[in-house]
Length: 412
Ligand code: HEM
Image 1 (cartoon, rainbow, N blue to C red):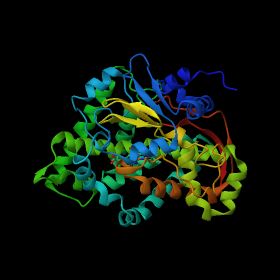
Image 2: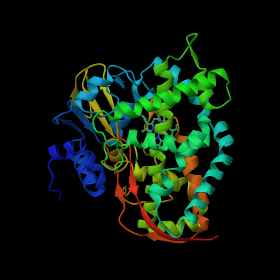
Image 3: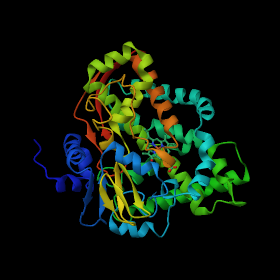
């Protein structure tokens, strides 16, 4: 029996701390799915929105990009930030609707197709191996989330962009500050204006990169972005910067969270860890199960372009819905035994990558690099166990474990 009301459950979606307590979060989401799957949330400091918690309703919204627009409110933010976002500091793919969205998405799309993934695979395996070596070098005990998982995906994505390895630490710091901004430990110290400061640093860095790649294209993703032409014109400064920002940020904490959370799920389910080690062919299904289990992107939003009805609830033109991916991924209408972590789960129709026109551009990359890390790690492990309680990032957008203390022995 839950002690929470529907109102309290809805309000939890606006509180970054809700995502640091998974049991309580899922108690709230289960309550909403069962009793109020399209629920109006009125929280102080936020414009009202409907929380959409069932898998089927989220699919209905994502499927119809003409009715449900990403602009002007692509993700949950305070009412003040919603207002500021309208001035268009950053306009990335996730903010856009067709026809612009289709054209801009096409600029980077080739770099995420299977051919490009195959080309990147051996470099990714090298990076994975280097990170397992790093684990070995840490001497048998470490914070797997902060010491290993936080670094590796950024190195992969920066390799795809074509940035020099000497710039990786700076990018690591900036992306963590941008996405961890709601977490007291990870955000920048100076408070309210910090997001703008981080964005400015990003802009400066990528402005220099664009100039360099325009002068001397080098055949990497950064060169494709710098030299893209739409309607006979290059992208303007904001569009170019926004592309780098979405690639560098979307490709990072999402996959780090999956890798750290995936290992934590294996530690909490030693039978599944043993099964995966005995049957490495299960890695592809295990990786998708990790992604479902962790669901690092907590929500995106859409706004109705016309009066409509969703899950039996009338929604007026201009009203917004929040798509709760963690909730969709525990929906017992779609997943048998949804709270069981099953490395062989198949089919696994999770919505962690979204669905429809905005379906994650980096999904194949995220799967490939997560697979590569575990393919390198699992055979080298002699033993591994928790060395303290895991800790989750406070966020309402993207995140997962920020600390995962582990004790381990690796083969040389
Ligand atoms: C496990 C890791 C990841 C998860 C869970 C994830 C999740 C998501 C989700 C939920 C969306 C929005 C989908 C929607 O609105 O329907 C998205 C969009 C996007 N993701 Fe990922 N992502 C991951 C990794 C990556 C990586 C590695 C990249 C590489 C750069 C990436 C790049 C993007 C981009 C560019 C978009 C915007 C696509 C658009 O709006 O058209 N993501 N992702």
